[in-house]
Image 1 (cartoon, rainbow, N blue to C red):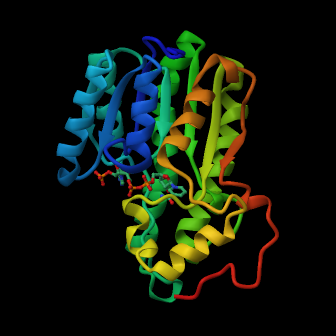
Image 2 (image 1 turned 180 degrees about the horizontal axis):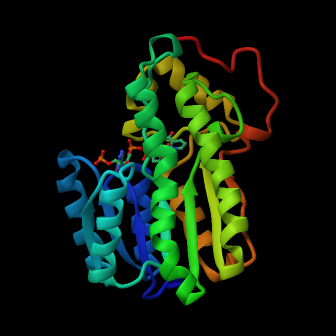
Length: 264
Ligand code: NAP
């Protein structure tokens, strides 16, 4: 199926993990995709993914930018618009989760987490909104988390609170931009085995407990998040606005169990 034929999409943090799966799913549905990454070490992965997208028949480009910095975001959007055209689908996926316990947390880590996970949504959305309003068309999908709704393990207050903020920001932007035919929604994954969680899930006991805690008795996959993003970016979801689509196996509707918080 090519539900997004010739639509122009930008995926932040698209070089690896969940972002890379989102890029692939959008491309499979016919979209042209700009793949954002931040660090030099990701450039190679982003470039490989770009070639994969081109093989699927769509246009693709890579663009380096720290999504927490306004100047870099504005330059990124300009580059994408110049090369692929006006952005119609924006996926705010870039995120970090520094596993630092609260009492050891420093100010720099707090700020970096909020800049990457929350401020980025403000910066990118504001930068694409002008053209979306002109066209009276836009799809914005923010990747939030089960942490947007509950205190998940490991307990990292800076990450958990930033994801709750991203969720509320999604809802506020949905109200603000809906009148221009711009849908703003979020997808909330539970734990997925990406680089973000490698260290955490490396402990077999923790891995086992994560699986056991999930009502579906398994972890989610990156592709499942891509599927949810495709739905929200498609016309099938044209009346879905301000929604947090949990792709979490039912974790957030389950009552907490005594051993759900795993002490490190
Ligand atoms: P990941 O494997 O660590 O990948 C993170 C991506 O974000 C990378 O492409 C990275 O690019 C990019 N990124 C980080 N800081 C950035 C910045 N300042 N500017 C631009 N790009 C930046 O993480 P993931 O597991 O795929 O997570 C993706 C999203 O899903 C995040 O928002 C995360 O919070 C959310 N999430 C993940 C899980 C999970 O269990 N994995 C669960 C719930 C929600 P570089 O490689 O260049 O740094």
